[in-house]
Image (cartoon, one colour):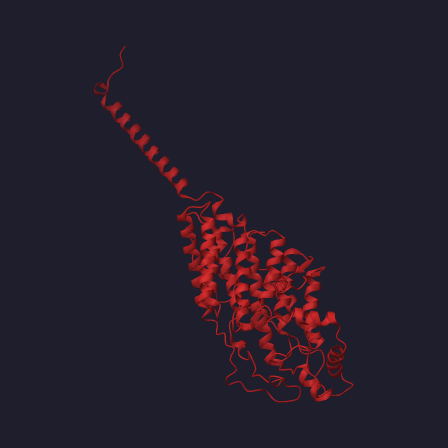
Length: 457
């Protein structure tokens, strides 16, 4: 029997066939929509690729900018430079954070940090290109004293890396990544302009009384940073973190513990060995164009060296630069707020008044109160972050290879941190009790920062 053609189907069967056709068409279109959705989504690993991408671009940038600052004239102001590199570390993390699976923005962790730009979650990004653009932009926006030639070198460095990326990545992805990195850089810069950072001493009146700091010889410079306490730290924690009082009261009595502490600095200065002098000079930094590394270049060189030795990938490196940057900034915030709280005179003033009127410290004493220590105030929390992240591992510091100095080797990060502290005693800048106390408050701050959870454990 021949099958019936469509015209001869019953009305009921024709309705049934039409319904089946509509259902088939709907199913077909729905399936196509689902397929389109799959292809519109980025590959599963593209939003987590920063954990696999090389961090070489970041390491090269930090080394590159250190060379530029080495020859900047005049040299960058230490406290301002530390603050700027702290913002740069945070911005670097934000520029690659979407490429770290499950990572959260630091805007959810830091004090009064605004929300950061978001990438298009349906597009591919090369996070190294985003970091490249963000760093180039932040260096130009945040670092002071850059010449036109410096700016041109920064642009050339950025272009060189983009050309390298183009060997394996499309122009569209690189352009998209650049746009995102620069958007983050601008957001970070705009946030930085609201932190009330002020190094001026205009309007500041020196407190009077026994043991009070006064401008010290040989320069008798005006105080630096008395109003930093009014600036915004990165952490709400830092608003209430405090330096404990001096372990014993100020005294001019020759039998007192304070006199003994000052006499210890004096006695050490009279018998400094060549090695102790070398240690004091190694950690002095700065000192003029082409003489020493402007701070925090030396510290960042150590951070970079440890990251490279551990073969840290882009996401991991960005997190460490962010956390060590936070440690630098808030370490100085706490220290300088409390320097002007305790307002303790430096050894050079006390010793000239009560022990030897002709004495000068081996290194020039900086223009601010003695307690707690600025140097240990930002080295110690950074070192503690590194210990928490990598363990108390051996470290080689090769920061001064460019001037022909042999590298210094340490059995642990703790050993390096101890030498940093003692370098200021050898230099005649600090009492030993100050270094001990400052290392402890730095350790507590570093532990707090290291425990900030940014990625799934």
